[in-house]
Image (cartoon, rainbow, N blue to C red; front, side):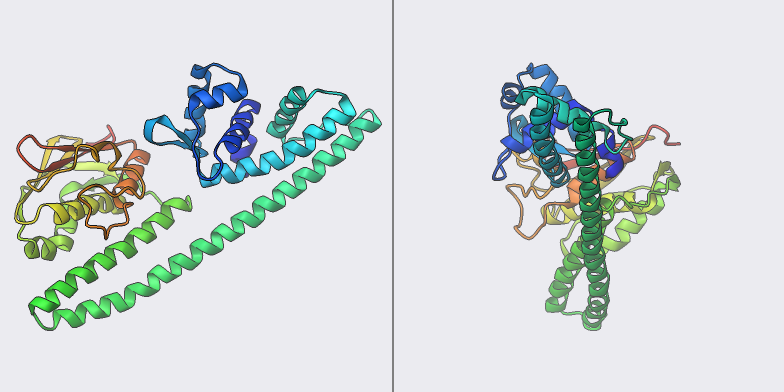
Length: 358
């Protein structure tokens, strides 16, 4: 994160500080509010917000409202603390007005931790000492924050791995006797197992160690793995599967593409009971998975890939992160995933892979 902070421009720091002022109590900020606070034109605001979103420091939600991400808020708070001290000191020692002192402070923060110029006056020496101390404090805060984040990730990763063992034991116990009650319990256990896998995936993506391994993969082998895993669920929900081997190879990360296909299958199991799921390849780099279920409510379509969003037809048991993670993963592989309703009935998910598909 320290490297990312060093690359922020003075303007980007100003926008972060403005968002921190406007986004109080989990509220968002409109572009017109940001433009008014910074006294700039709205096109400039849109451009900078896109940059902050791309850097993972801000995000746009419904109606274009802008929010700070947890990382963006933490970074903005650190800048705000340093900026406040610098602004006051510059007003005292250099005689700057508040606006000019704020701009100067942002410019200085954008250059840290680059080497500071040699002071030529007592005032400059005093300011240099202050900046160096602020840099030490910031670096220590960053180190402490990273350590806390790593401890938290390690704890939850260990917990998720530990819980998989009793889940496997319970699964084998339930398979010993084929009764309706055991089949229902097995279905619930399968759901729990999927949630645990999702937690692990969420942690891996959030930690920046997503361990992508890109290579040419047999698309049919990935699809068969997902089908085998969900076969019992398809049978229990009386879902007919239509699938013919594609004979295609795609440039992807096998484990993460498998995760995406499983999330789509999970959606089909929930909403296509008694129906059909069809897997087809439209072009060399396009995979389509369609069902004949209840479809997706029109108001949910624009938000179905948002993190923690639960649609109108949700059963109330889902986390609302499976499809969000899927979009994040395939975007990092330079692909796309899209959901739409079919003309007759049901929903269709379209996965478009990286153009390097062979």
